[in-house]
Amino acid sequence: MNKPDPHQRESLRRKRASRIAAVQALYTYAIREKPPLPAKLLEQITAQWQDSVQAQDSEWPMTDKPENALLEAVLLGTLSHLETIDTHIQLRIKENWKAERMDPVMRAVLRCAVYELAYFPERKTHMLLDEYVTIASGFFDGQELGYIHSALQQLAGDLRASDAPSAAEDA
Image (cartoon, rainbow, N blue to C red):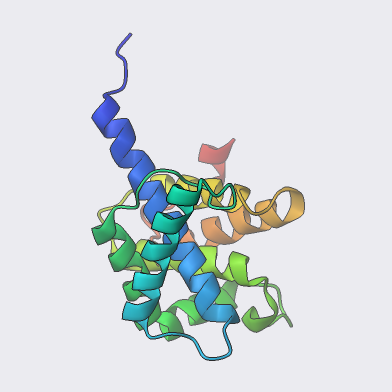
């Protein structure tokens, strides 16, 4: 049996940390009355990670350093395509329910996932779905987590018809 390469595991943890940081930054962006500029938001989330490591803050879910290039790509890309991303999300949420009423963390998870699904076709759909459901499980459980999983599968189907996981694959 082959053991996973420790460098590969570290790389995967850093990528997850980047995605979590992007979700947290988008949450901050959503709840502030006057959101910071994207570059300032990136700077703040990086500083927050560094401060939490030094303070051994248990509120920060990852101890791995985010991969700066991925964090920047997901955060800034999501913000620059927010209107298009929100249109995709609105088409998939329950009828008579506005995205603005959605929990801001849930909305941040969906926004980041939709950005990667739409603008990074080389990234495997099942990997992105697994990654964002895992990230969401750090914030939600039960019904909310099921909703996120279902919404992501539907959004992946909309954005990547030929690569989306089918119901048979989930069984």
